Image (cartoon, rainbow, N blue to C red; front, top):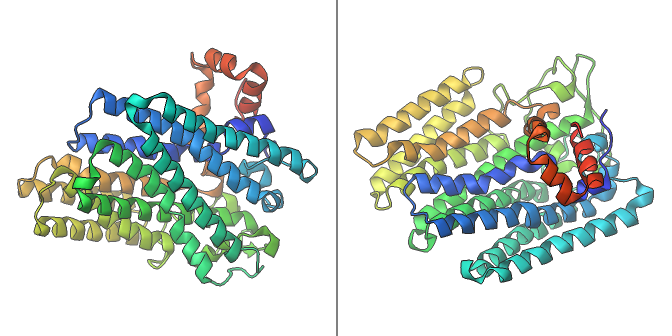
Length: 410
């Protein structure tokens, strides 16, 4: 069992295991540039500043709010020490919640100052919209979570409308991140079809990613002696949105400790929320690639791209041990189709779908213990030449607390 997080470390980096999500905005921006978007030096600088504000200020403040609202339930979670939420104990709730509130408000204040301090980059509008979108989604998410959880200890709990709505809403944050990157590279007002297609792809990808991750996180409530899984949860754990997903996990035995099980590596029900969402995402991603590289694509070409994306994504979902081979075969088909019809930049057109499927291969191979694998690999940065600067800026005590939270050397 790992040591609990320190409060200073948490306040600096509230969700280290979610750091990989921060790559979505710049990735979509780069994808648009590769596909032909005109990116000047000013555009790149503007995107970098917005990215920094989104991932270092706006989203951390949103995470802190989520952790404040869920503080009591988080303290009772069986994997409380490993999840990295606002640290306890309960006796220190008032002090820790107050400190987190203050830091979250400071982050939003810095965002406002940043927008006003650089008038030449016209950041006020984009940062206002992004902040409103992030917290607008958060308000809906928190309301649905309050309505749909904390009511039953039955496993799996019934799929109540509020729980299903929660699964849908959770993908909106990925649409906010990705569409921010796309909007900073492309004038979406002139390309509404691209905007809709990309938003659907990003939103559906978010649903697929989060519901599959929640299915793995539900295993924290399972035990096994190399036999059938046994589930134990109380209503006050407020985890129905996770535990309702266990009905789509493979039946039988894990054959290993539940936290080391990789249930999504094999075939799961096509009706599982992550599979339904992935099909929508794959179809829309293939269409998005065509619309990115060919703004004047005919309806026939667009429909063919979407259909091919749906077929290849379905094949990947239904496959199991040969899934990487199926993805490669699907990529070849999607690469040949625009090339044979003389469409420009077929490789760039393939990238949205291929990126989606690579992400799918990655997160479907994870277990509960390896969800945070990427941040763990980044611990090697402790030996980089930037460490002395970080120690100077943050202070030695705060730096040591962060390194302790990450489990790396000081």
